[in-house]
Length: 183
Ligand SMILES: [Zn+2]
Ligand SMILES: [Zn+2]
Image (tube, rainbow, N blue to C red; front, side, top):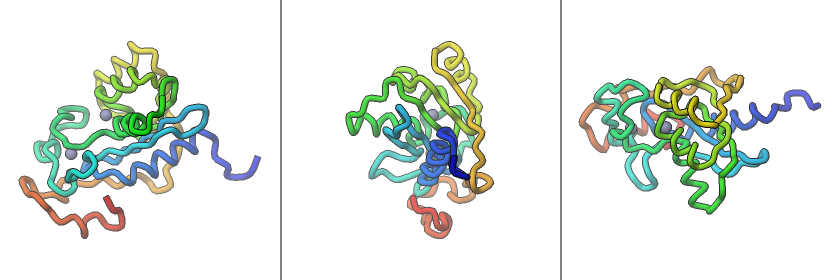
């Protein structure tokens, strides 16, 4: 085997990590990949629907109300990475029944419901996510969960903090805050 050639799990997880860099969420950058027979079918990262303003631009209620992770997802205008990956597959008419998901984070309860019904058989993740209902549904379903031991190239994806967006503001300039990462 060639030196430094990554195994499949590391390979897909590294791609999911790169996908997460397109995230426009203020709280966490998530990337997801739907894979079948070692082929990538769809990708997704978390952010607002196409053409709509991102939380980065108009602020996020979850952030402003200091909602703890794992709760009140409906307050955010963003779609989750896993949801966007499922939607991307639908957009192109690709069947994902029996496929695997690689995600930088363990899916929340909303996403796990969708993944179960989309026929996803296995979920590989890098970081946990505090959502008890999600864990219960994973236990109850036949979906298989696996943690991938993959070392991110950078220490971690930088966490964007609340101070990026003053509360109640709209049309906040984000250019100088985002740095090199374009949303
Ligand atoms: Zn948001
Ligand atoms: Zn989710």
